[in-house]
Length: 202
Ligand code: GRF
View 1: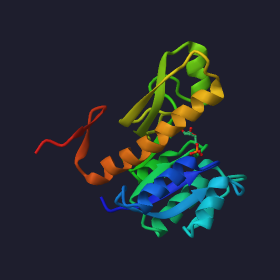
View 2: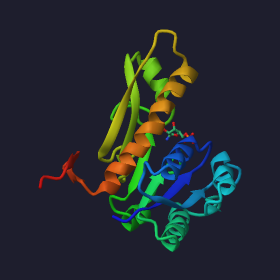
View 3: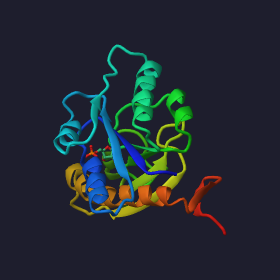
């Protein structure tokens, strides 16, 4: 796989910035070809502009999901993106999108999947009484927070944790995990075997 990344975000953009920092110092052998937000005032897209990256807002409002996804796919193709990274992108992708980038879309989720998919995963872990949670980077498939797992990092739930403190410690691990996962995918050394992402046998 070549090495042009497309980032999709909807908000803060701290995962995007961690990726961008690792690209800048050569830890990820790639370039960020384009950053796309579906929200005009997302801090993440403003940060992308400030860094001089190609930054586009593609609003979903008033469009069917398929139309919105087609517009995003067109933009990603225009920038010759090889690997799409969802970084706090708060919309589900339609099959149109996934067919355009088969096994080429990554997402990060703040729990150890398959535990606690969906919204407020950190709160779900606290309320369930989990002693360990973490984050997962996975390929996106047609089901929510479900595709093949690329990497995971664990985080202990401490007795005095609240949603805020736990989320902050998970986020630190997210920033490491996402870059690791991107490097793994771009290395070409791994392949999907069933549900597992394993080093290719020579
Ligand atoms: C992260 O917790 C990520 O796991 C989830 O959305 C949040 C995005 O945070 N999918 P940020 O915008 O990258 O700071």
